[in-house]
Length: 155
Image 1 (cartoon, rainbow, N blue to C red):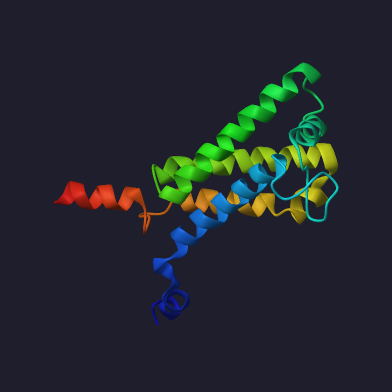
Image 2: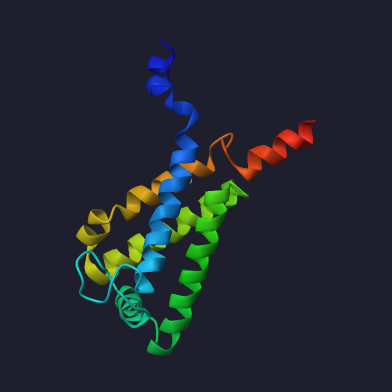
């Protein structure tokens, strides 16, 4: 029965949902490190400020010199903002999804090295990375700038 109508018609929305979920994960992390969810130590706040985020980045990358940590933390922050915006708008979605998958995999491996595999599994970073790679393989991206531009090219 056509794969049970692909989960009751959800096939039309799967890539849109993945784009939103991945972007939300990045945006939540970004806003946390800028203190928008509360100060350090508040309930459900991972970092609460950039200093605590830099400390966490150092913990996940113990092989890097201390002087390199701020540059890495800023690079990751800029990458997350860029990827989140691209995913939300659906611009160059395949490339944003690939970048997301690799970045999340790097986070998962860093968490495994720095804090243990259990923390990476608890945060579902491996699963999010896998979802990003699946998104990159999608044939089309509903409700995206990519789809809009593709339609205009066909006209």
